[in-house]
Image 1: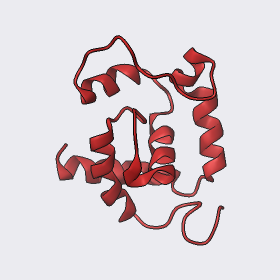
Image 2 (image 1 turned 90 degrees about the vertical axis):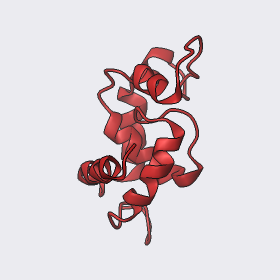
Image 3 (image 1 turned 90 degrees about the horizontal axis):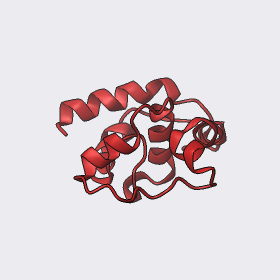
Length: 115
């Protein structure tokens, strides 16, 4: 992904910046298609799909109503240590996004406790 696209995506997530992390977690677990389809506490591993990482992430998360919430939650929770598919993005893209996301300023749950 280009830096410009990543910067735009970091700006797009700003609407979630003050949503408390536990609230994001509840929303993603309740409304995320991967959780809903699997009925489990953790999202399922995508299997049987032999696609490049970006295409796999896009296909696995297609139609999910909480992509932004999922991405914001993963950036807060795992940061540069992110693994798997979250928010419709592959690991490498989320790692690149993380540095731009950090530049967007404080968020609930960072620097000074949970809001």
